[in-house]
Length: 208
Ligand code: C5P
Image (tube, rainbow, N blue to C red; front, side, top):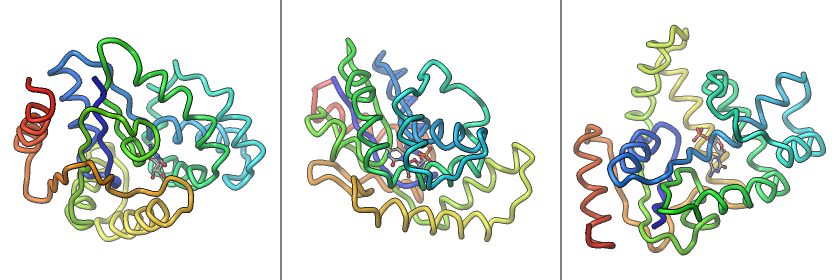
């Protein structure tokens, strides 16, 4: 069983994805971490995010055993990830791992931007998780505060809008709702309510 969760930054898809995976006993992959890992490797080596050759080489040799590095959660790494994610060869290099991951038994939940549209077009369940930019900025700001990061909510909103524009506007695998995906708007929902809606959709599709 493959469950695809796509959506913009701070929509709640990451938390939802882990919870669904735990509930059904499935593997879980936050695919944003792959793009973040490429960006972090470039930053660590003081290379430019637009250095296509280096970004592709790093994507091809990515160590997926190190996706728990806390530095991957840094704000600058998230921004960098959306820059390297525009490079088609980087996306191509990360595709095989994501498909392999999705094919594991007994199944997997993958969250990202292009899971339903590109990585797993045959996913059993497809959910597009979103929320207003303001609601997402509020959540991300709270998260940054809890990690001691100094940034105003307005600054976070600006970053979110810029990231949305980059992710939705790129030519290769842009962020968009797949025709077969249901829309889950979490603006007014807490995680429990969002989880209930997602499980309702999964039950409707696979009967449990
Ligand atoms: O989800 P997260 O914020 O960690 O993703 C970081 C960036 O990686 C996104 O803004 C997006 O540009 C890119 N990404 C992508 N495709 C995915 C997952 C993430 O392009 N499946």
